[in-house]
Length: 111
Length: 118
Image (tube, rainbow over all chains, first blue to last red; front, side):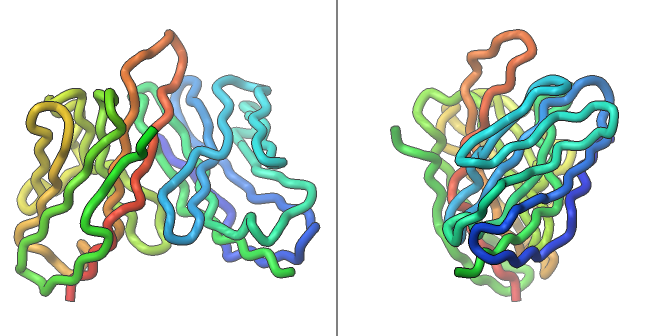
């Protein structure tokens, strides 16, 4: 079945540091890939998505590129802010159009 | 546009008791999902509704969990009797049905109900 493996956390960075959170997936066919973010006390929000190979999703300074050859969708940001502190989930939507999530990565950004 | 509403936000019960959670999706969204998110894990789909019909409940523990979506709008998820391992956040999400070939309908999530079973 479909699965998503995320880099284990927690991750602690200083403000303005570079962020990478690794994500790899297993799925049949051509899934769509997503990053969701969960801020403290709030629901999950879609951060960015990519629907086909080599697509780059981007939002709020975050980027991720759909790499079919390595089955990866790593999340990056060049300069993190304290307000980026949250839990980040990688997810995929396969042929059943249902979301399969990774286990999440807790990011804490220190001032 | 109002988001997905859920209540209660927190619930503490003892094992073997019953509990119910309520979800009101975004107006006009025909598809509704219930997820279980255990601490340290990603959300896991329990059940998916399309209007008032069940699309997928393959991961719903039907011996103790039940869900309904009468009239195709609000939904209720019930656990009876609860076990310690049911402690989790229960998330409701909704999406529209307008679908283009190959597209994905974004799921919008509510804030969740945090259940603690003692």
